[in-house]
Structures are given as structure tokens and as C-alpha cells.
Length: 176
Length: 386
Image 1 (cartoon, rainbow over the protein chains, first blue to last red):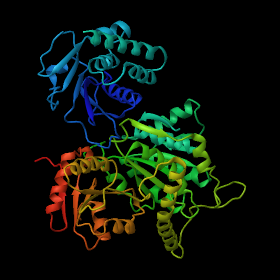
Image 2 (image 1 turned 180 degrees about the vertical axis):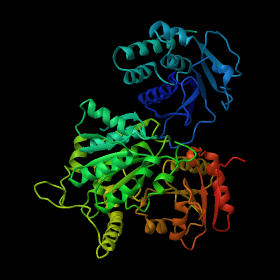
Image 3 (image 1 turned 90 degrees about the vertical axis):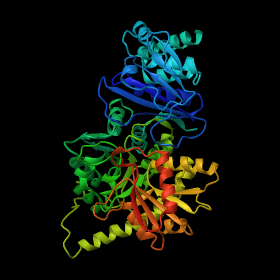
Image 4 (image 1 turned 135 degrees about the vertical axis):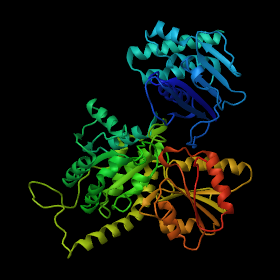
């Protein structure tokens, strides 16, 4: 079973990201769960969300404490919370930042998701962009399934733009 | 082939109600309310299905509206949680006393104070004696299936009692996972159009419902509910099998569901989503050559005494998890009832997961370790801060 933890700020769409990832994994033929941290939600405050992916039905219902992957939607969180807490030794981190390199003590991929989102969506909502980067970096889910899950979640033109943002990030990180 | 979608527990319940073709939905968004009635409101607004949606001014009124609607012989649905369920309390007795087959989703959440919107079972356990059938689902699939089954059970002429489908707040209500959605026509064929054979309110045939029950008859009305609750065991089992025949899914025998019970000396008894985490731990222990079983109580009312006795025969260590507490008796509700059911056995009772405290695999392992050493009836709190 693979466990992914998302760190974002309230209103940035971390919970939606966890749910889109669960759906994309399902489209890839896997079992999945996507859920928020069961806490107090406030706009702007640090929030977490989780996705579990497995080849068999997932029965565990506790929160995630030792993720295999961590995805950080907001670079300012790096100073506010310990995003790698409990991360498995060979864990991987994907961070939205303009910095090219980050030393978090784990294998880390960086992407300027805010830049891509502003360019394509016109708003700094990075959840779909960073999912594209996550898929490109880890190959845990296919780009096709991710785009399909995004198009399910956001209807019409908004969906198409979000799918495009994911694809741009996917290709950018795959080429690096 | 059934369509599979990745959805939350509350959406699964809303789809269940839609497939059941409910005719009246009454709801009030008290804090905390579930997303369920919002999803239903959207279905209706989008023209996906047609039902009378009554926005009321409190949960008390939501149940009152369901009672009034159901008394006219139509299929009704509502959803609530914690404070909302508590506010409905007196109306719950009226629903069962008038023998109305109302189905309600309760998303299990703690009661205030302190204010807490997270999961525990105190809200529905508190309503255990109201004459409602209570089904506790373990996942989102069972949530959808249980809503459909609930109408079949409630509307059975031998039963005519309301049914509460209970699902864990946040843990199921806010988690998306794959759920098979039954074919609409198949569900409609299975449930049929609700046409009560008993008397219902109709201007063309004036009758009174819910009148004064004088001492000469009140006691008999209670005995009738008692008898219907007893008959419900058989009907719930039958519905579980019917459902399996048509939709290829069943939940134990409908009342209880065992896992890895064969040759297990140590068995945990629990309700709701924690059964998944227990199963996860059981599988891990099995890899290490250790055998632990799980008995999931699916229907808390009617309480399946006979099945429990039968399934736990010969089991030495019985550990009962309670996501609720009975202050003053100092056990959880399930613990006391297991003690009354299995009088010759050692029962250890564990108070867990109150007000959203996470129940982790290591909590379950701690319970199993304690249970194996525990010598007499004992209640222990698990997951308390030092």
C-alpha cells in the first residue's frame, strides 16, 4: 500500500488534490482512498490531506502517519510545519517552489507550480498542476488517468485548463 | 456491470436514497450536518430525480415533516448527526410509535460540550431505545447498500419500524473510495413503488394516526414494537440474502459479520469503520502466525444475541470496542450488552476514539495485548494522552 500526504493551506485545494489522485489511481485499475485530515479547517491555515493506493481493497481507516510520498502545495509551509515528519526513509517529496533545489533530507522534486498555474489558469491554485508534477516525478499514476480524474472534477473549460496545467507540469518534471 | 465511482460516504447515501426513489426529503443544516442532503438537493435542482424537498427550521421539524409525510404513505428520507439527532429525540419515539418506515442517515459524531464535530457513536447509541432499527456500516459501499436495504426492511408489513443507517463521521463521510452503484431499474424493481397495505392518511378515507394511547392500550403498543424488533432479525437476514442474489453483495448474515473467527481464541467485537482497521491488524498478525478474529455487529438494534453466542462459542478472550461511554456504569454500551449476552465469558471493554480521536493499528495491537493478559471483566480507555 502506498500512502501520500498533501500539505497545503486552507483554500488551496489540497483535499481536492487527494481526492483527484484517489480517482486517478482508480482509473489506473487500483483501489484507493482520499480524505482530509480530520481537524479544524480555516482559510490560509496549514491543512493536510491523504491518499492511499493499493492493488487490493483498502480496509485501514486511521490517518496516515508514515507516508511514502509528501506533496507540498505552498512553499511557505516549509518554514511553518515539518512536512517530512514520519516520511519513510526512502520517501519522496514534491514541492511547489521557485527554487531549483531544496535540501529536506529526502529525494526531492521541485516545480514552479504557481508559475504554471498563473500562466494557464490565471489563478494561483496549484492542486492540479502539482498533481501533474507528482505523476511525472513518481509515475505512480498515468497522465491519462490524472487528466480524466481532473476533467471529472472540474467541468467544461475549467477542467480542460486544469488538465493542461497538469500535463505541462508532468512533461516539465519528466524532462528534467 | 455496475458503474463504479470514487465517492464519499455521504454521497453514497444520497445515491442510495435517490435509487430508492424517495418521495419526500426533509432536512435542516444544523452544525454539524452532513453533505448528504446537499447532494440530494442538487440532484433535485439538476432535475436528476423528482422528490419533495422540505427545508425546515430545525432537526426536530425535519423528523416531524418526515413523520407527517410518511403517515400519508410515501417513502421518506432525512439525514442528521450528533446535536441534530439529539434534537430529534422525542420525534424518534413518535416515528416508531406510529410504526412509520422512515429511513434516516446518521453520520456519527460526538455530542457537545465541549463542541466537537468529529466521530464517535454517542449520538446514535443514546437513541438505542427509541424503537428504531440501527445499522452500522463499515464502508461507503455498505452505506449505499444499507440505505436501499433499509427501505425493504422498514416497509416489510411484519416490521413497519423506522431504520437509522449509521456511518462514521469524517472517516466515511469525508473519505472518497470506489463504490459500485447499482443499476437504477434493478433497485426500482427490487424495492417497488411504496404502496402501504396498512391504513395511512388520505382525505378520501379520514382516519386518525398517533392519537391518545390510554393505559388500557399503551402497553400493548410497546409490546408490538418489541415483537416487530424481534421479527426484524429474520427479515434483515432475508433482505441480506435477497440483496446478494440481485446485487452480488452481502454483509455477513445481515446482523453480524465475522472475520477470521475460525480457530481464534481472541476475538474483537466492534461496530462501524474501525472494523476495517481491526481487519488490517488481523491480516498483519496472521503473517506473523498469530490468529485473532473479528465479530462486527452490523445491527445494534435488533441486537443479535443468538448469533453472537453462537459465533463466539469456545472463544476465550472477548474484547469489545466502544466508541461511546455510559457514565456511571463505566462501560461502553456494547460492552454492557456483550456482558449480558455472554454471561459465562470474560469480557474486556475498551473505550476508544471519542470525539474523533484516531484509532490507529497500534491502538488495536495494544488492545489485543491487554486482552490476552486480562483476567476479569475490565474497562480500559485506549488512546488517552499521558
